[in-house]
Amino acid sequence: MRIQGGEEYLKKSLEGRVFTNGDYLELRLMGYSSKPLIFVVASHKPAKSEAVIITSDTNIQISEKPISEIPIAHIPKINYEDIGGLRDEIRKVREMIELPLKHPELFERLGVEAPKGVLLHGPPGTGKTLLAKAVASESEATFYSIGGPEIMSKFYGESEAKLREIFEDAESSAPSIIFIDEIDSIAPKRENVQGEVERRIVAQLLSLMDGMKSRGNVVVIGATNRVNDIDPALRRGGRFDREIEIGIPDRDGREDILTIHTRGMPLTEDVNLQHYADVTHGFVGADLEALSKEAAMSALRRIVPELDLHMPKFPMEVLDRIHIKQSDFETGLLETHASALREVFVDIPNVSWNDIGGMKKAKEVLIKAVEWPLKYPEIFSELNTGPPKGILLYGPPGTGKTLLAKAVAHEGETNFISVKGPEFLSKWAGDSEKAVRETFRKARSAAPCVIFFDEIESIVPKRGSDNTQVTERVVSQLLTEMDGLESLKGVMVIAATNRPDLIDPALLRPGRFDIKLEIVLPDQVDRLEIVKVHFQKRPYDENINLEQLALKLENRSGADIMALVNEAATFAITRWVDRRLIHPNIQPSGWKITNEDVDKALKKLEEEISPSEKEYPERTLRDSEYT
Image: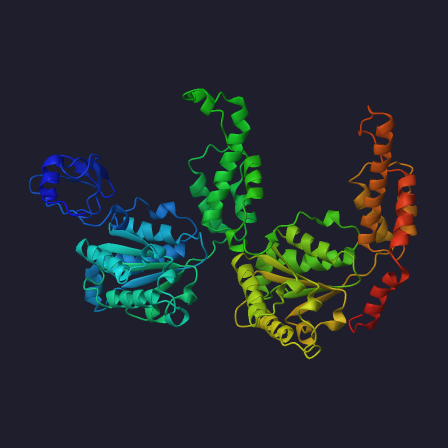
């Protein structure tokens, strides 16, 4: 909207008042509207000043564009101390951006040009935007933020005009930083887009970056979590000269971030931030912030029932009673998950070694292979030895292969990605291999991590054993991931199968599945342990002879034993309900599983599992070359 003589009127109306970027003001102008017009301060000079005062000498310019289309320049109030876990990245950013902005004479002396653009890439929530704001604040540069999709317009030429205006404003208020978030959305590879708008924006951005006069005084920072989708012309020297990967923080980085986010919280002495830094594998800064907030909300939920919410304001003695405890962080941890792994099924299973009866040898092998490298990395480093890349668990169905894999992840406090074999297969060319690549990429991001392939024979059968090309490509992709150029540091692959004879032999050589562990049907000692594990969780009659019961379960798997105990509990529940119909006042406390319930469950188990089903695992293992 054009306002005739509006600049002079504004100057007279606002003389003596103080403003800073982003301030809103309302004024009534005769002849324009009965309602006041809303203005916003988009920028001011000198740009380094936090605020300016309007005087008779002030030059005011009114843009014809609405507020929604005006980029508002500001200097963020964020310091490097507000960012945790990014020490190396901060050092690189200071060298590439802050130093040229504050001391361009150093680069002039050396006869080199300062970078025009820096590309920050990495998973969402790792602090790319925060880092860009911090460098703008520390270098006292004016900060222009552009959300990639905000530039897009359906009108011809408008998107490019918006970009040009921002670059012009940035140069006029130099030193300044232009931050383009989600740059992949406005500058994708031109050969992969259908519309003309994206191609024109890429061309305009290339032209603007090439034509920047005040090199060193204006720096463009791009941020993306899909760096390989950006047009390659932007990634050459002279445009985005440098690329910095903002990765997922390590253990010390997570502790730094937690310390920053909890420094204003009333924590009790039992809160151990070091412990949560240890167990939050794969968490990025945003996840750790969410964990801290969830712990605070848990503390609030505890105290709210005791408060009178109708009070206008709570006195200090009430506020002093609010503290965040260790239990609040435990609750928060249940509600917060690593965002890098939200697209795949991932958790830390709640299965310990004590939940698995028997299998002493298998447990020892897995503890040495998985837990030791995490608990004692110094000795592995000293001897220049790494953990095995893969472990193959094979044996009859129901023997506890999946349970063992879950216990490995729980005891080692690692993330756990579970993949069912058939989930990978797709009729579309390339989709199955992409699913394999994405799973390994996510696991690397969330290391230490266990990838568990159940029924692996369905996705990596012997090549040439079927008429489809899909499984052959999946086998090749899995081989590449397990011993390719990119290291599997911190990632363990565990696979389970009851048909090892069907798996492609290339996967079974050393360097891929280094350990092949047979999980057989439990013997009498193991069966007794399994029976005790399942009965200890339920009230049962002391007259039940667990040793005799274990003898009766010869040639039965752990899954059969669990099914038997569950069935016995169901018969006990049925007895209680029948009794309740006769005696309505009866309570469940003191009700137990009896010998009668166990006998009924045994009979039902015998009826439901046919001899052929019992023999199948034995036949499979007999045919396997690995027994």
